[in-house]
Length: 380
Image (cartoon, rainbow, N blue to C red; front, side, top):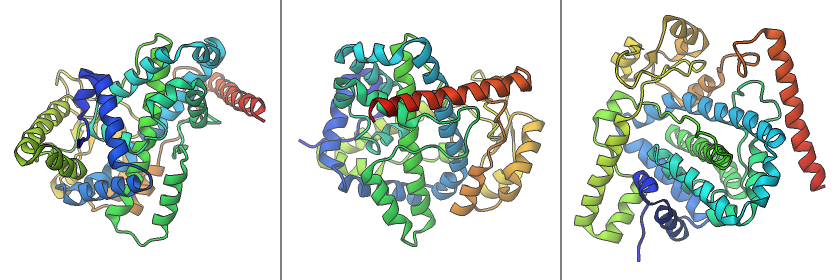
């Protein structure tokens, strides 16, 4: 029986069935290495056929880099506290496989229900996020956690530490030797970022759930207006599988259901300040609207928002001056992604004095090295 990509909304309605459907889909459609090329081609087609798809992918790339790096830094800080204060390692290993599985599945469902691209990203990281493997062997999850921890978490890096995988590593090496189009370059870069972002989110949500803490805030940025107003396309892979599994009529009904689901999620998204050093979102009640860069919107139909004059002028100096109202290419997008503000001293405790923050940063880095070194000694 044919299976198809589960929708994000199904993750919360019935997490167990959603996971079962995902596993069936991965076994059928995404067996390595064939799955890597399917992922890549699907993302490339999505970028090329969507209205303003290439410009939207390129303009959103720096924000995706920053968000992924910020999550990784936050995980490192939180994990260190849990390792030392809450005896995380022993508690996780002593928990039953059912308990571990419950927290991991809940985390995956919560994250993947937030956005279509996060739900699809499960296809990019199927080896790392296989529920059976993670819950049966507690060490697998702890090793995954330690592999994504930064050595220095006193600031947000401008490039995430990627979760290595032999299949993806070989595919990246193959693609970098080719003279690829802009769409192919950004497609591969976006896949790698979404792959790591989903892993980071799931790890963080799992940790907090296991320790009885509130889940982290996962605010999804609002899409550009020209994307929201257009008809939301069905994912290319999903469309083919739908027709094969259900027939043309039922496939159209399913596609409509997915568009309605996507529209509902888009309406819940918030406008975000485009300055990467700022994490402000527009109020959900609509009481305040951020100011838009007029030139970007009128010339490129690209929505760039700022919460204040300070953020606008600072972002202009850092990166926006080079791209304002201009078409983007992959090289420019990568350069823009590297222009993360210097937050080495303010990332952790901005309300405290510089000397105190510097001391805390030094202590935090020492704790990271200690945890990683201890793990290395245990397996040496």
